[in-house]
View 1 (cartoon, rainbow, N blue to C red):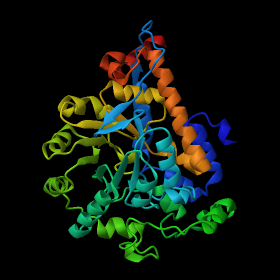
View 2: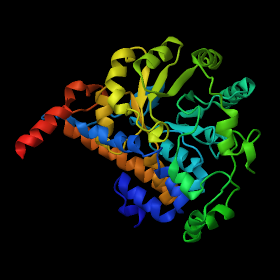
View 3: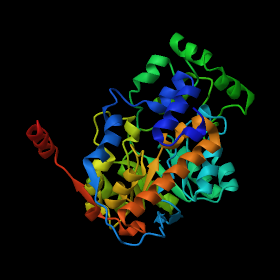
View 4: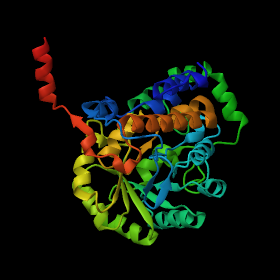
Length: 394
């Protein structure tokens, strides 16, 4: 399969699977425990139907949005994800360039493989810095100050990852940083030699945001050790409130899932929240962000910018989220598969296809701007009614 034959999320996933060694593909592809939540994230959109209007005149469509003070040319953004240069040697450089081409926001992770300063200097599109809360309060302050000096517009604190999820695919293959592969995992690398050639012939893999704090050689300071030893599970609302005051700018919490937590975020001065279950990679069996969106919009939609991620695969998914009130939606695997498949051209194709889907679907919905989307565009069938209908049909 060539890149030009990729037309959707599933095509990019298939191409990435063909090109990546099994342990690395499964790191992107997998979820926690039995991966129930991972599967539910996308399926949740199927329970809700779009109701289009016709004869509205849709020759010109404006899909721009403003979220946390940042204007985006389309209502999707590239969520911050870790370890991108493992998937393709261009890593965050490819994602940032593609995001700039399409006028949208991109995120840089604390576990990113390109420095946030380099990306901020090269690209004009809005940049989010995603970080974790450390036991070392001085480190937290230093990371925020570094981001401010680099010119990062939005600070994003991940709040659903005080400990790592149980990702059993990684346990089976031995995926870790540094690698501790099982025999099966080593065989997977052997049968995909091009990945290894690219890995050793390009810039050495490192974590510039944390290189002074994480020893890539292993031990307690490996990536696994970073989560178990350096992150602070005692983090609470008072800690976050202090960080919001110290940052004194656009501040977002990623991983909010309840109306009460959304209210607290607004009360302490956050300007945005991201409804997220980390793509099904943390608490398996948790509710999906899309299923929680209406409840949280009712609670805080007039006080704070609400976004969501996890499970977005289609333009229609985006429109359903926007119709419930989300200001924008984030994609993760949706661009990571494309990155792994073809680097920057892959990410550009993925974003371009998504933009075309959203524009086409808005026209089919009879909407010429995002603010014309509302709950009036949606209908849902209760599970019980659907089951009764199926029984009647049989």
